[in-house]
Image (cartoon, rainbow, N blue to C red; front, side):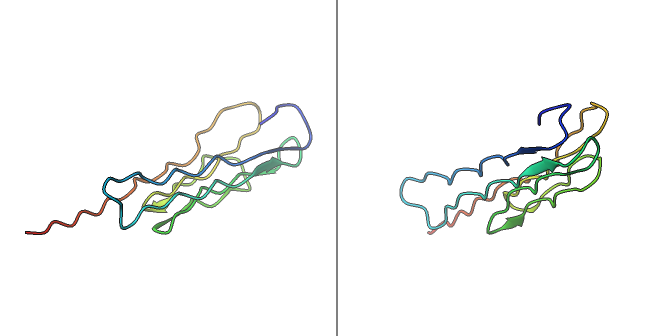
Length: 105
């Protein structure tokens, strides 16, 4: 995000790509993009939501200074973080994806 400006917005990150399978997968889905982060003043801002999947929910965006919130379920992204005073903070942790394997005898 641009520093020292009164109003600024940053697009969310891209969603994860769907897996490639050979032979063809039964289930393979891409993740949703993260939400937009915005600063409305020198201190106030809204931090983007984490991307969700069919199997997991992205961390909710914050409206105050602090680290991001972790995603839950499978393949979900963590939310953005926010700070004032030029200090850096970490975004929320994303979650691992899932693999389903069915074996036949």
